[in-house]
Image (cartoon, rainbow, N blue to C red; front, side, top):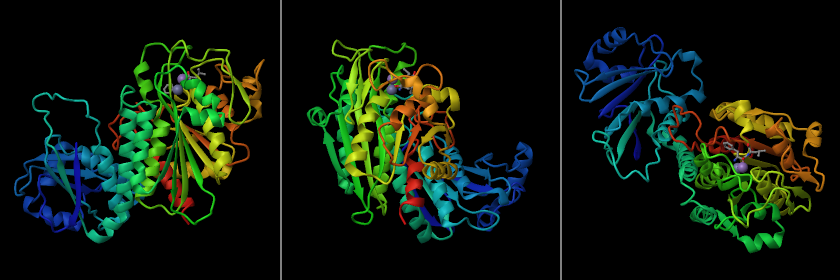
Length: 496
Ligand code: BES
Ligand code: MN
Ligand code: ZN
């Protein structure tokens, strides 16, 4: 649903669906009380009839409320006022947007609480939550059931106590919402549309925001010796690409920070082919790369004061006479050799070369990679937490903190020499799989061999980047996971 979001003063007459907030004692803010005055005791009677108690994120629906010129009145609980933390407002915005029926054309959210109007930052979070909730990917839906026709656009007005201050606080969130939207669109696109070159072209659109974009083609990557990445893509009709994006909003000459994404546009497993069940989900095996592109867009749009490199390895892992075989040995750009035991463990091969390339060319302060790397991380952490692996405690702690603040949660997993023997190869420096046990750890361990001493973190987003459970701020298959997390990491630690 296309959403047109506006801020207006609290005095604006509400239209369409009116959404207000109350606490656990069903108390309303003073501005809200004023708007609802003509309804008398309607809210308290409806609450009693529905046993609505104002619990956090619960809601009360009143259709055609007498005394008000609106189609519907929705009261959303925020729970106990003193338990309400800044990070809860995003969810409230999502819940509010979720109460706007599909067919509605207009809604008004009164950003007001019994303790007084929330701070501009909190209101801006409500707005971001609403934006994220309103996203849907329906580019390929040409037919609609009767009664499910959607209006071209829904206008949502958030009534606030200080329009200017809220608009200022919202500007950066608007960039975040657009970045998440871009990432979700990329993840949701099917692989017949979004193959490596098409992905590279979409990343190239960031040029209009002042991002420097370079696209390496197969010849360029051959020259660089990126044979591990190229080996994965060699069986595909679609040529591989590597895209390097640079945003230099920081001090001139200070070393950049770097984000690297796995961009397997489709993962059949290659010759070690995957079973048919749910293989269609492997169009989302580029969620890491999608996040990096969405993040770069966000940072550029909000003119982040940081020097940032984004790099993505784009390939299709196909089955063909030209595909690489189990037993093949590839020489990576770093010079280390890898024996390919299983062609379905392809993400680490792609990342091995991109990590080394970024590390040696840019000498970044730190690197974070995102990858839908292993099914094993879903067994370990489900769809709630991304797996975090790192060679640097400070970077790991900052990511954990950013995860708590944004709700894009990460859980640290171990990494260490104890696991080395699992990836010893008879013929090469290492093999690309370490057996059934600790599958996510041995995958991360391979990546760690391509970052040298640079502080680095790896986020295994196989469970969170796509198909994750629907939340109050996401109803889409592709979640855009990581954009908000890493935007927060950059804002809190690297823009000072
Ligand atoms: N892209 C998959 C991992 C994956 C699985 C992502 C499910 C999202 C949902 C990855 O390339 C893969 O195939 N990993 C293998 C590794 C194994 C062969 C060592 C896996 O997890 O089974
Ligand atoms: Mn695979
Ligand atoms: Zn994969």
